[in-house]
Length: 198
Ligand SMILES: Cc1cc2nc3c(=O)[nH]c(=O)nc-3n(C[C@H](O)[C@H](O)[C@H](O)COP(=O)(O)O)c2cc1C
Image: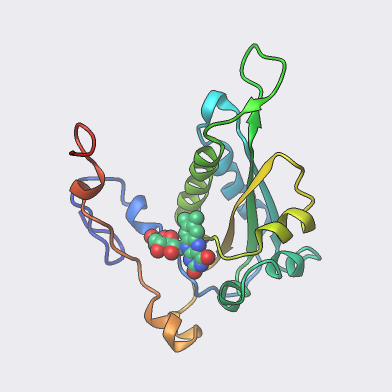
């Protein structure tokens, strides 16, 4: 199964899974509030353990007073391309939850897993909407917690740049050469019937 880009799946899947990828070349245009809300709404509908919804999406839009504070959290490499994004998100998740019927919070086993599901839904919606998302681990997690007033009990998970795709030639030469949807490991390497073999 092929897609609008160079990717091919070995089994039939929705084309959207191949069409989502993580560009770095962005146009630097601003994102309308409603367009960003559509991406955030897709994240909102992610599944989570006990429907605990541990994710929080802290965001800044280009052209607002929050923008420079968020951009300044990224490492130098990520700033070099994400400066042309339209929105930046820092996704954090609550490390505790109140299970149904309980009255006190307990440690949440799957809060990061759940937040990952929210990111994936946002990114897929982004690809469908023409606002591509690029996740980043390269940022100052401690400074993000303090500068974004993240309460105790939340883990800073990842940053996300969102933007309209630009021509790869707008990137420095080295990055332009890498501006292609990547391939994946073989299904047989990641899906192991019966568990790992001894
Ligand atoms: C949690 C996470 C952290 C990432 N961190 C960075 C990063 O700091 N900088 C970067 O340029 N790309 C980063 N990426 C992008 C990955 O390299 C990219 O998703 C991966 O190579 C697969 O490519 P694709 O998203 O285009 O399919 C990150 C992706 C994820 C999911």
